[in-house]
Length: 111
Image 1 (cartoon, rainbow, N blue to C red):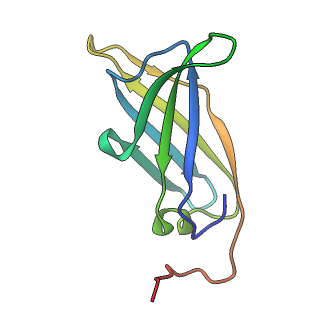
Image 2: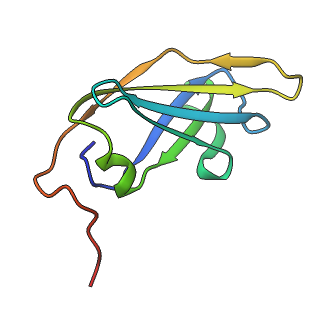
């Protein structure tokens, strides 16, 4: 992922239907101590089957230019947490995302 871009990060959670849960995606940059957390309508959550028949939830997390510019180049850590209707809270393993820098570190606009 590049700073200053608008990526949609895909996450796969095997064996769990997260469509009826409250989902949080957190991306943390330990160099700058920045954190981005998205939840609710900011995320797209679907439940799917893959080719082998394994069920999984896919969580799509769109980021803005402002958010990616706050991340320093190098590695950022991300994690999904969710809570079900019975109040049970869960967390996935942490994963790393590589962040590449850009030369112009401002939000760009279409003219």
